[in-house]
Image (cartoon, rainbow, N blue to C red; front, side, top):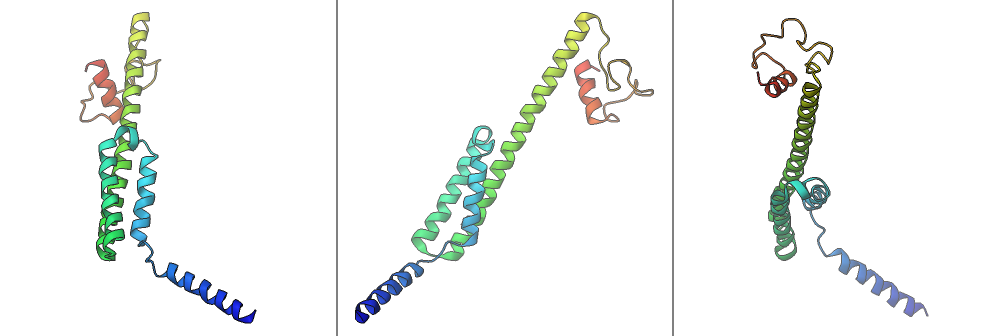
Length: 159
């Protein structure tokens, strides 16, 4: 019985050592995987698919370098690039989503202004609906001197 326990312990130890000999992926590859998954779950999937595809290809190159070559330095470098491409895709997706929201807001604002003009109400300017001229001194403001909000209003009002 004692011999049987020793054999079992040796087999278990040998099995564990066999599993331990496989190299673990570098932290850069793990980080690249997480970044890609985050980008895939973001607006990048819909709004920046080409960039997301490029990130996926870069991640696949890093995975191949690690799996086939076991050259950790090359895999780390490729994983770093893959992570940056995934982050870029995610960022571009967020930017495109923000631009879409901005466009929708400007369109809604333009439609509101048009509806107010049709009703004969004065257009709502930067100061609010009660003062179409805006704050004192803003009548002759050039687009270069105006704030971003005022510039968008000037564009919509045709100044």
